[in-house]
Image: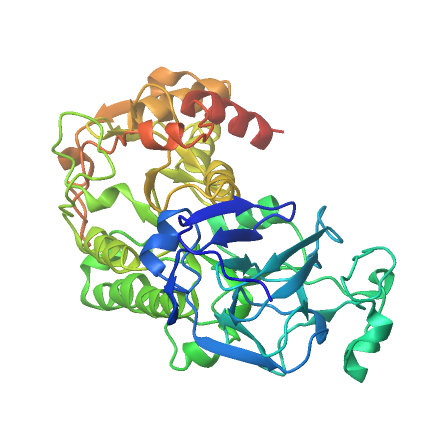
Length: 474
């Protein structure tokens, strides 16, 4: 019988299967027995392991040497260790992707544990009698979950079991599992895109396409403000929610009805999504706005600058940001002056130019245009690269402009005289308004250092405008 090794340092070792990580555990013992911290969240996550949020602890006790179980791949993560005894473990990647079929084997005793990510097949063979095999999982068993199984004797995996399978105890169910060629791979966790029919939603559709694990919803198929949202999906099957839905009628939000709708759309619904994301370990991506600032800064706004919204719309966006910031896994993407597929400032200016109308355009608000295709690409980059969670400013790059500057550029790009555009102050522009008008931040320029440091490629706003107008002009 193997004697447990005492006095190890807590260390982590990567394996040949992505995400499958082995931990050496400190075990303290003497003639009386031993003690160990089998799971210590702060220390394990401090070494880089994701806080996978275990909800259930299972123990499998095995009387005899050679008891063999597996190969089972479930749609949840596991922290596997041995309470007493010793096992030979074999893990096979049964997830969709390039590592499908990869195999890793090692022995576990009480001084070693392994983190098994969702979709990696798990199996073991006992090497000592009275072995207790224990595992933490971060979901509850469900008949509706997607499972995959692999035959212990699969020739492709070629696992070299210490005791031949013909000589050991195996359940009939495990003997009947398919070979690798017949295995249904475990798909990735789903990405849910909320508000998929809006300007940003359509850009996200173009970015992500029709991959099977991407789910698009609008208000008719999933109303985030309706009661019962927590039971509307099996949320443990989702890894990411991208919230592209928002109330954006800036001026209407200053009316009594608009104020109510803005708070419902930008805060109430977001709060429900945040609650679901927190409870189910989901990454929540939320799109914010330059309107959370008052625009009085004499420099570009950084992510950590205090918010000071001027109007109702900005207040609801700031409140939504504060809620999302409580989600352990969150990205708040703060943007400005958004242009996408649909009615927008650029399309309006091009139409005025074509119809011979000489517009008055505000020249005391400064910022950068941001195209929805770039926001969608930036969101995907943050998710794909597992960037640090938090707030990221994401706009077009380059020198800031006023709305009047942009209007003149549109006139020029469409073959019209830019001098036809007259710049006016915000007060002059709205002086004849009969409906409520929301206050606008004068400085909407956002500092892009953090996004660039995270590897995002942010296109020059002027160049992107040229491309956009060129693509829109017959």
